[in-house]
Image (cartoon, rainbow over all chains, first blue to last red; front, side, top):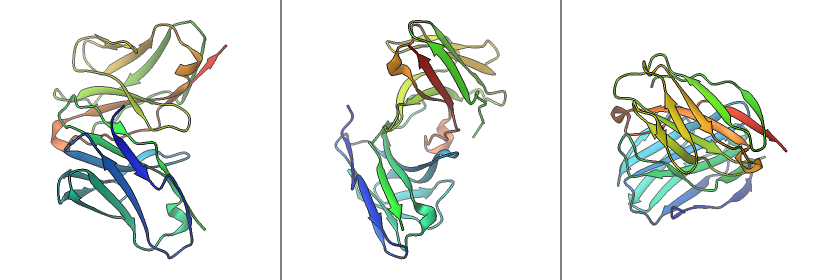
Length: 113
Length: 111
């Protein structure tokens, strides 16, 4: 299995509080991604990174920010959590290339009350 | 990104072959066809990918139409463990290799 861990795995928080989810990899892959998954919507890309300090927005980036200060860590921050951000969040890593697989973490379930 | 169309759900019986279809009529010449699956309560996992020729691996086979506008993921003998959501995705190098997932096909395997 690819060395990718997400933390925390479960979190309950209140509306308006900041939340940071961490994705840590031991594979030295260049690309890292944050997806969210909601019933009826499938997986949607929030932000991704193509190198240290190189990030870009995905299809549902509003209300989220990311940082990647080193290869192994990709942080997803909700500056002020809202109930609409209740979701399961998945991190993924990839070496890149048209044939490069994405390896996914086990997911972080976030509930915003 | 070019879009794919998959049936919302399919059913199969255990130990029978399963053919999961995917339409991608707007595929470009450089798009690779990738398949992932997501088991209950887990993150997606890679299954197989191809460009033009049919592909086989230990998990499945991928049959690609000659005009590349459709493809079929083949599970040769379905097991209960194959019950999952299967995603057909097109991947091109001009998008920082990010994958856009649709809603996939929910495969139910009956014992």
